[in-house]
Length: 193
Image (cartoon, rainbow, N blue to C red):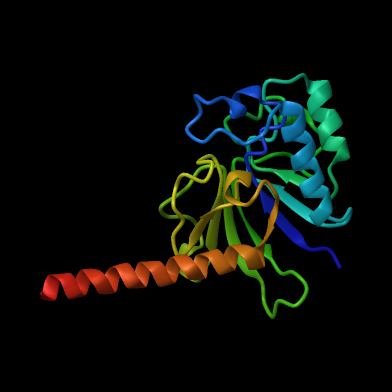
């Protein structure tokens, strides 16, 4: 049975992503090493029939032919949520036409019920379905924007340069919730002092 994966900000062939001028330059000696590492880590986790939701910035600064070459090497049935660097990626053969943002429901094997997830390249403070328990997965921030009890960066910079499963995201959300409760408790104690 297929499983669902989330990923963002792969920036395949984007030489600038390695630049020391970036807030968080990626630790690869060359863009070729970067691309090959990300492709290998993707394919080590994902099977051909798995669903992959790419939350923006697939490739940048390369030809359409190069973007297609990388796309064809990646396993899974791939869906794109548009990021700010996806001009060439829009023309790739995604499983469905790329969108800006949308709610999906993930129910992987072993899950008792589905989990609503709002997907957008950009982090939101509120989103459709939040009131019913939906979570939010975003990219764009390259691991620099802290998540909350209900939202999480699924970009490769935050996840050892690989896609993640919902169960991994839920673990991080639980850690964020515990931190938020601890911060709130500390604030109450501080105010009472």
